[in-house]
Image 1: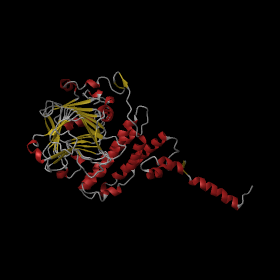
Image 2: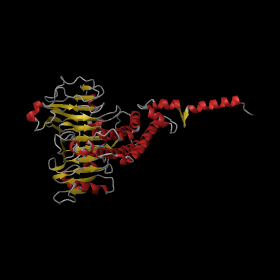
Image 3: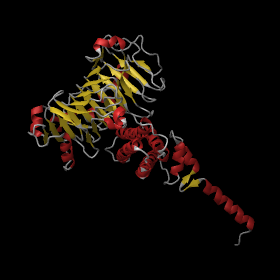
Image 4: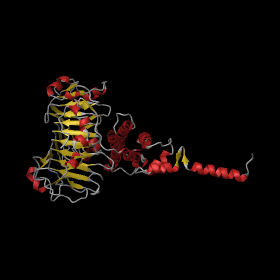
Length: 516
């Protein structure tokens, strides 16, 4: 039957109304509803129009994860193309950092999009948090070097917002992992005994480094280069004999399960002197030793940066290694000594020396049974920590437990003229907790210092500390500061809960305390 003009118009109107509410399989209202669950709905709505129908919450999370990964890959390609546009060495340095940081971001997102049963939500949240940290560090590098006006606008993208969305969707409470014979199901037999004694380690070492020629190599970098050509996924041991090794070392993301063991603090020393003040490079790039490969273990080594107290940020160790452990190590520097960059980390029986923000970063990290020494600062102000949690759904934070915070030998004679604080907030949701730690007389009665961030959204807490600097009656009155009296609250920041320690630390052989 032939249709009249009015019938055709009505039919087209009905079809057009239906199409206007659907975008390639999505109903517009559905897109808005799902994206309304995220902190950044605008890019969510825009990009979801190019994907399949949303089935449920898990499917929405998977789609969001893939969106973040796809756009990170696209952004990385764009950044590669900007090389010719770098106008000077400072822009080139910041751009070069971004290349590496985007590579690490994509590596982490590739792990996060794995929804196989053996991947836990809290692990995925750690990888997402690290990915966001990488992108923030990329941007911070341009700001730090004073060149944020030109290249960054060309690098503008929605990747950070998309990752932030996935973190909000993926957020889940801690879940106790599964075990077999007292160990996590993924622990390889025999690996947990590898660190029992230095003598057995020396005999089991895959590579020996010695300056006197008694080893296979004379430099650590030669050993790292050799390790990169090895096959297999087991623990790879590099034994570094006593000596002072003046070299900057990078252990890349492709080098997993590396263990570096020395002859003891003050005996095996790795030293460098790069700083922001002299070299005009980013803080990220000043590290004497930088570690990205997961499951790194360092033992009986001193990591040192000798740039001095007047040359700004100068990192002795930067770790972005997931499940990294440092046992009986020393970290010596002034400003920004120990950069706990990202992922989950654990430090046991270590010494840390510094002045300004000398334990800082965006990892989820616990320092246990450590000695923390504040040095004499040119500014006459010390800040022990500067934690960088920037997202409410982030999992990062610094816990210092069963440790000692005291003055180094150069500070003691002038301690009365220096103010030393437990920390200051680097980012909006900065999180630091001090548990059962001896706080010496150097700690200012206020305890904590302001720093251009909200004092309501941070989380700073103290629990059952001792010593003359532990009295809390004159501490700051910020909304985000807490004196904990409840063991349950404090337990959230212990090795067992905060960094899921019982699922990965047993394999290292390093002693640890799970709870309070």
